[in-house]
Length: 431
Image 1 (cartoon, rainbow, N blue to C red):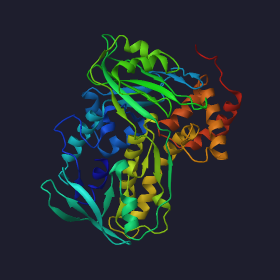
Image 2: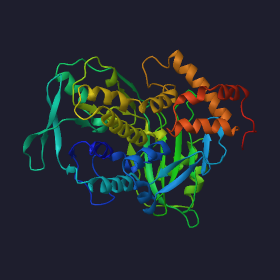
Image 3: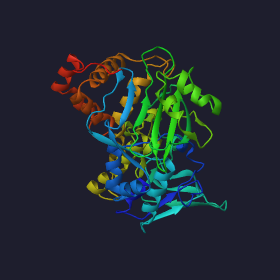
Image 4: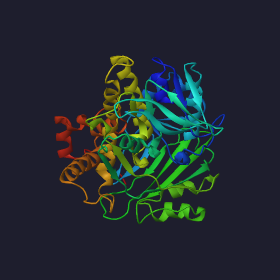
């Protein structure tokens, strides 16, 4: 939706969607992960609002929560409890279904954008030097070719672009995967009376330093007076879909029983949903020596991230904004536009990719050769920063500058931050 809106000022846009789309907030087959915790960091929310003005207000009117960071968060990190500092940034919290429906209504109200749902893309059409359309199968089973001056692959983790490029005779792109085997288990609860407005995020984070499986959980207040609770564990520590075991996992497997204690006062509204496709995977299309004209890959099709860090939607929103900026700067249809756009949409993914890998490479089994020397050095420094952030508000703000995707990781290397990291926390650890 955001890529479509980004391109609408320059050309007529056709969105090809395999699913049958619900009329309002509701599940769809192509997004099984919608049942789990989602958050839009302020860096992504700003990109969303820039592309589709008014969407944030519509979301909040529909019940989404604007959660100040770290003011309204109770978080146990691997280095201790974070303090609830004055607001530095924010998160938007609601179900994925509400977010999609609100955004879809706004985008499809634009007369320059057409939606073809229940339509599947079969292949790219064109040559190794230029793509000029896609072959599709429509809802009645008929096949046809849609011609286009630009094709954007936003098909997520199921993307087949790498295979299509190989079929066209182009070399395989550089690719990296780091998969901790993380399993997500989620359930919706009715929040108790008195805990539905202004209730904080509760988060017990996993610790990658133990040498064993990582286990964690998060409780997010969402629309309609509900809590969305997601529990997660890496290989050897996975939760299950057993409803009877859900709260037991929260109490016995997490590093603190905070979430289990809260659930004792809440009423479950759904069964447990389970997802296993959570690995980090990145295609470095921007590094390819040859790239066809008229093709851009965005979102999870380009960089799929471990969802435990909550960056996927924000990276996708920033990528769409970068796509629009590139077309605006260089002009629609100019030679080399697709390569420039591919490089531009890849940039917002870099900080989130580095943050995810900085922890995930330390779990057992996600890579063949384990963490590199650079991984170890980076993790040691980030760990020192996180420890310092538990008792230093200035460092906590710089850390959230990066985790909210509002600033790049370079801010963590300023002389002031380096000195503060060496000094450590200024306040004692919280109990």
